[in-house]
Length: 260
Length: 377
Image (cartoon, rainbow over all chains, first blue to last red; front, side, top):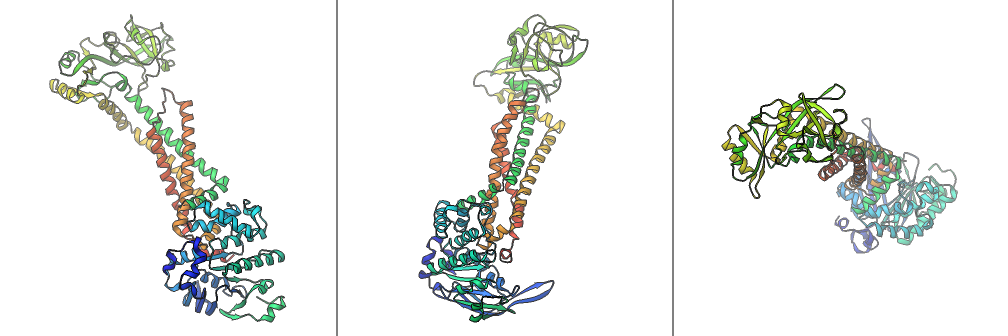
């Protein structure tokens, strides 16, 4: 727990090597249960989910709508807390962290890529990428220099000063990828990163995300319905009826309508 | 913190329409507070103008004196008693009283006649537009204010009037010596004032005192009161304050101006709060995104606070400029708008406080934003 207090995003890349807790797998989930109560009726969403993701690994989670993929991702991202089971994210047992420390963990060590990009409308691409750094207290000037470097890496240097409304969907998602990497997070969580993109841009965005994560040795967990991008995964899991099971390779290779 | 300000200001300015609406609200608040406050101060200044600018260090009058324009008669012989008090350099009788001026068209106007001793002219008119103040000693001489021209039938230097059925000749016009009451001041000499007012020559309204250098006004007042038990004596500043307080307490002026000023502040606060709140509602997803990225409530509140303070600062600056223009264009001796630095400063601080309070409403909404919503899109 103490590793959170002194973490600084500028040294995020060294954190894994320095801290003992970071030597553990970035994601360890054992017997995770989660239920929602609506109108007084409890609906179980996750029923004893087990998952272990190694450092630098790329894991995809698929499953039908309402199967609990987003709930699982929200728990891995410290947005939701489990009802039962043990969840260790980057060596931290979520059950032992208070809300503030979970927020710090999310801010400093986890990057998010959202389905609808979720860029701030009033900020340029450059400033959008700088937001996570500024939330971590990096001075604006330094944050902008680092944001520009990231935009270069996603091929958007020329569009750095464009507003989201002036960018195409593919460009917006590349800005979102750069933003997710801004604080050099050890764990990147992507929620349907290609859902709002056509085939070409979807594959391009996924390739870019995979390359950037791999180049930094980051761990990637992707929730997706898009079977076209499954080949990018090291392992694929299917979430159905609240349980997680390994995805069969033949279905991935088929690439057709698989019911995910 | 600086980093968050940067994000906050950029997102605020990006919503140009809403931003300008909020700014207008703040500017409106600042203008209303300053103009209302300025009119109030201007009115109060008129209430004590004679005391503040009459040239006397101490005002001696009937016991219980409370307002310069509403004086009671005192024996003129008190002047000699006052002159005998150590520290008094000059003591002169001063007469005030209501009379009626007959106008050239046959109409009439109530006036407040002010008579000063011709040897020193202590308490005579000062800001002159036409003629010299000293001309008041000329035969039948009176000085009226140029801003009262409409009431007094457009008096010019040399024109004749009748006051208390006595002939009066305008020998000069002053420029902005107006009292709190609607009754115009007419300056003349003490003896002529007695004639206009049909008062015996052995009474006056006040004894005006000028002190010797180094004399303590409060001590001299104390000594005067000791020697003249039926008199009251007050230093200029004290009597000035008494005159002002009289009108505030007797007329409820402070409450009325205070309410309208408060209303201005409230309107400004509602506009700023409503604008910030609407802006937050419009960007719920963005706040959810910020929360998902690890922004805590403290950071989000500081962002809203930054937006509110920025609007307050910019709105105050715009408001102060507008107030300066309004004062330049509309402030006259009839309706003076007095905006001292402390009023401008206090109104700015008030508006900033109001804007900061306004930011609490949208924050209340932001607190309830669930970051999960950005994963459920």
